[in-house]
Length: 236
Image (tube, rainbow, N blue to C red; front, side):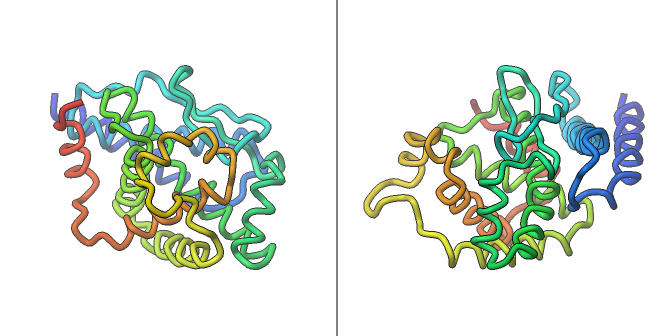
């Protein structure tokens, strides 16, 4: 049985390796975007199964849609929805230009985050739902997804891209206002207003980039497989 899972892991790793240079870039080819993200999903799941073979993401896959957002996982369909760059909502393109300081830097933000860092972030949400390991609030659910994305890319040797994501996130935070009112508990407030946050790039962006910085700077985080093991062992 162990040999079987090692074989699955090797196959998924080989599949991702062929697409790895295509990540962290703009996608104008919807088929290519779907295939590359599906490769990330397969590799992510294989790595999780190497920790616990009973975990099943139940066929989660990628659907390319004309953008209503930068990308998201929807639990009721068990699908990850992504837009190509051409169909990315103008609101999010404008947000990138504004917070990064120029169109060129805004496009770098989009390339590194929307078509790189956040891809395993969405797979992490699929893991939370399908393994019944959701946290008690949306703030922690998002932070855990950002931690898993950080650890995943670190495991894949993408430290260069991670460092640049970190630098961009730190810069963005200097341009955005903390959307959590003074005196409010961040976790409770974010959870109570979650639907509002996800529709506002500046509010949601502040939380996401803050968490990306926090995860990158946390030197106590274990390796991907160790974190997954701890996650799967916690009580729901």
